[in-house]
Length: 245
Ligand SMILES: Nc1ncnc2c1ncn2[C@@H]1O[C@H](COP(=O)(O)OP(=O)(O)OP(=O)(O)O)[C@@H](O)[C@H]1O
Image (cartoon, rainbow, N blue to C red):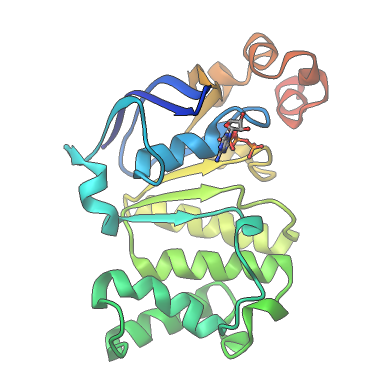
C-alpha cells in the first residue's frame, strides 16, 4: 500500500501542493490529472524526496518511501531528458540495473538477460546499439518503458507517458501497464493525456494544488469536478469529452 498523508510542497512563496492525502493499493493503476501547473509533477517529486516538502508523510508498505527508493521507478517527461547525451539504447536501459548491481561494476549475466528481455518486450531489441539521440519520440518512450521493466521496481511513476507517441507505442504502454498490474505493482500515471483507453485505470486523482476528487472514472470525471479543476477550459478538455460520452 502506498500512503500519502497531508503532503505540502512550496517553491519560495508559491504553494504548489497543499494537504494532499490518498492511498493506493497494490495492483492499482491510478491516473493523476489536473491543469498545467496543478502540482502533479511537484507532488511526485515531493513524494520521492527529489524536492523538499513542508509537511507530509509518504509510506510504502508501511515504511517511509524515501528509505526504499530502490523499489521505485520514476519515468520522467521525455522533455526533461538530454537526448543528445552520447549513450546507446542498451546502456541507457542497463543503467536501471545499477540499483541492484551498484555503480562502476560490469553488468552480470542476469542483468544482461533482464535488459535484453525488457528491450525485446517493448520491440526495441533491434535498435539496442543505437544512440538514444537517433530515436523517434515513440522509440524514446519505449526505452523508458524498458528501463522501468529492467529495474523491476514495485512502485512506478510515469510522467506524461502518452505525449507525442504513436498508436502502436500507446498499445504497448497499456499492455505493459496491465502486466505490471497483474504482478501486483503499484502504478501512478500523470498526464493531460492518459491515453485513449481510460477504462484501464482503476482510479483517478484530480488535483489543482489540492486534491479535488479521488475515485472511479464516474466519480471523478464529472462536469462539476472538471469545472473546479480546469475552470471554463473544461469545455475543451479531453476529459470533458470523455465525460460527455
Ligand atoms: N523549480 C521550480 N521553482 C519554482 N516554481 C516551480 C518550480 N517547478 C514548478 N514550479 C511551479 O509549481 C507549480 C506546479 O508545477 P508542476 O510542474 O508541479 O505542475 P504540473 O501539474 O506537473 O504541470 P504540467 O501539467 O504543466 O507539467 C507551478 O506553478 C510551477 O510554475
